[in-house]
Image (cartoon, rainbow, N blue to C red; front, side):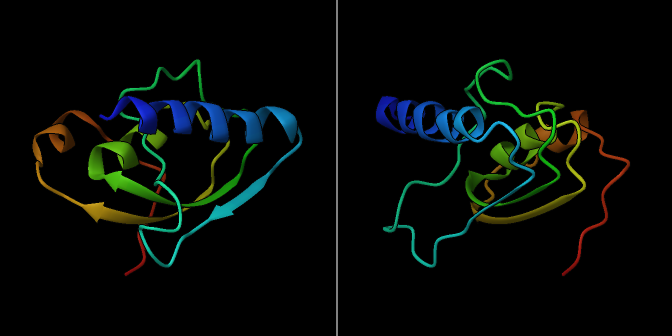
Length: 106
């Protein structure tokens, strides 16, 4: 991951979740990848970017691994997750991650 992307994600998204401490719904979906960088959590510790009250999240992510990182427990109240994944390159991480409470709509 590019250091500036990691900094952007930890600074911007973490500040949003910290500043808006009662935030329950967050939607940041770009129509183009040039609008702003996607959320990338795969290399950010769950203690850096998390929320105990966020229930709805709609975001662009870089990869499927970032999607799985959203579901690693850092957003433990999440009931709705809408995601636009830029690319899926490796399915090896799917085997070790199980999510039993989500249903996906296509």
